[in-house]
Image (cartoon, rainbow, N blue to C red; front, side, top):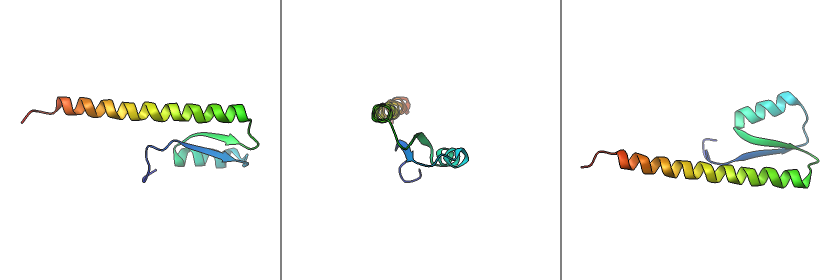
Length: 75
């Protein structure tokens, strides 16, 4: 998280322990977890939505920076 804060994280695991999964999701700021064996259609949907989320985050940052620059006092 510290090195790559903008990364959308997905856990792909065979682990079914709810406490372990919850801790991993909370600690790693995980977007979603997928249990093995996965359904290919559902897997592709998660990846597609994760990419859309990433694009929205990047657009939000870009617009926030644009607004910040506009609101800076002129020299």
